[in-house]
Image (cartoon, rainbow, N blue to C red; front, side, top):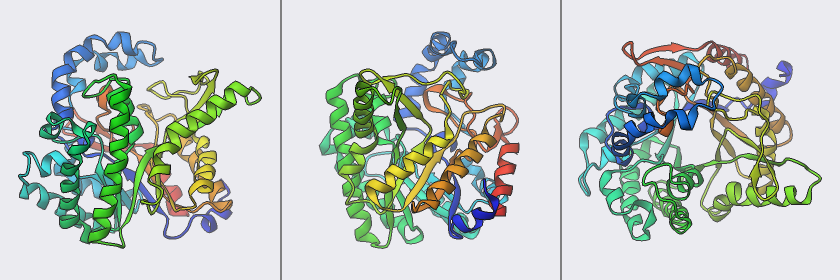
Length: 420
């Protein structure tokens, strides 16, 4: 990075932050996902070799992946109780913003019954962020919801949106006074695909019809939430956290590869954002992947370098994505998630540095980029993979009283931010 230019390119009010999701860190949640974990943990452990033995680090993760306990979120990393300590770490890392979730199943564990203790907890939580001069970015929905909502069919039924409306109204009523930024939905494209098309996540459907219903209803859910929130507080800045990939043609001069690439870009990256373009104040997106497509939508990525999850790593791929987002929407942009599964902390500093170079380049070309949130602040429960993937700037030793240790890459990141 050009250190002489950095101070001029990154605005003084730029948000440097980290992200979490309530179910992945809090501990003690009872929702549709936790029920699914308990029902499937044994099977996942038995199938681990079939699913994961192709990974280059299989010998390292085998003992975790073949243990049923790996697939149960359970106590999480006890962020629910240790959030003050975690906010101090945020300050120690020179971060000034934090993306977090409010767990619907805590606020409304039974239909129509609000838990005042949970409401008060999150009020204290947001108040503590303010006290520590950390800008709160609230993410309303990150894939989990109460079991009673799941029993009604979740987001597959349009008639169920009234329950989500009610939850959003409660969020507005109780918390909006102390908030400026709200993200309504996290990665609706990923949720619809993995829960209803691929069938790997609850409720494990494999139906394009159901996928279409869910995806359309999530569009409606966001639009309705936007209207509700703006009615309570018109100055709120509202968006989503879309999962966007830097999708490229494997053979740029191949007509078939180019057509396949444009098709994938439209349906994966832009379809949802186009439909809510008038109901978002900013574009929030999560970046992990540069994917190369050949033939008829066949992904064919390079074999190296890859993360612990076997994901091809091309951090600089965020640059062309930023350019495309700005060209299409001309709205402020926040990178709401970006990171790498790296238990040995051998790639994270490189990933961060390449990402910062890419952001700097985009800003130099006029992109209105206003914030970067690394995934994740803490090692967390990584959905169907469980506990072995390590995304945290901060290592958490779950076998030693949830001890927090700042990783070397995070210390480097903190120094670079301080220099800006």
